[in-house]
Image 1 (spheres, rainbow, N blue to C red):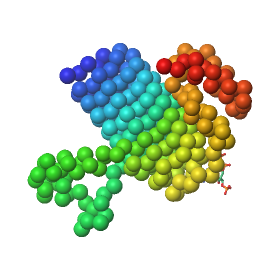
Image 2 (cartoon, rainbow, N blue to C red; image 1 turned 90 degrees about the vertical axis):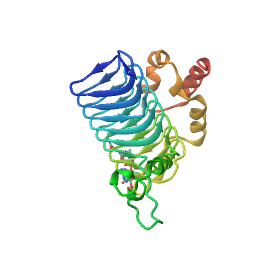
Image 3 (tube, helix red, strand yellow; image 1 turned 180 degrees about the horizontal axis):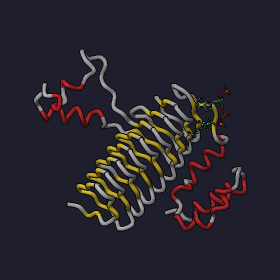
Image 4 (cartoon, rainbow, N blue to C red; image 1 turned 90 degrees about the horizontal axis):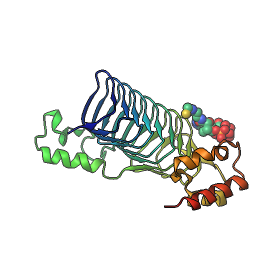
Length: 245
Ligand SMILES: CC(C)(COP(=O)(O)OP(=O)(O)OC[C@H]1O[C@@H](n2cnc3c(N)ncnc32)[C@H](O)[C@@H]1OP(=O)(O)O)[C@@H](O)C(=O)NCCC(=O)NCCS
């Protein structure tokens, strides 16, 4: 059953997709078992399965997405592959990312999946195949809010990335990251924090990313100032307190 009311580009096919009039799926996409929220967009040639795309969030062209739970106002850059992942709001994800790929068990005789995946024509028990398929993705990757992931980053399975992190271009992230860490390299190492521990604690408490959009709109100057100072922090704390739900 499709409840998709949004724009559908040439050659795109949807199957069991829900989305309002304001959502857009551009050309040559394959989208199935997915919910799009207000003004969500999917770029050309992307494949999206079993996912939820939040308000105003966008997946750019040539992405391959499976089981992604995406918050609002988050963008995913072109040619990215994401599997089994939950991502918060106001995240800026660059291009060419690889997030959440499953691990093959290398303790066994072979790392090739033919022994459980029926599509190779050797194993025949579909139930066994499905069981292993689900098991591989039972623990999602979790990425917080206001996270910037630069170009060409890989994030391994089951990793948790805290709010406000910055991940430098080309990094490979194999371990959990604390909020507001700046991380570079292979494997990813924390080179600094964006702010002091005290400020991070206050930002974590305030959670500005949950503010109503009209409040963010009316207070854009707080975000435009080139340095976070006490005055801005106090104002954002006040707004978050005032708009708690
Ligand atoms: C991570 C990043 C933001 C760091 O910026 P920064 O805080 O100004 O960091 P600095 O330039 O002071 O570098 C600090 C150290 O980390 C190293 N470093 C910086 N970025 C790195 C990266 N991506 N990979 C490996 N090392 C890196 C620097 O060489 C430097 O090392 P040194 O102290 O031994 O000289 C930036 O380097 C980056 O990767 N930007 C990504 C740009 C991009 O992909 N944009 C796509 C559009 S979204």
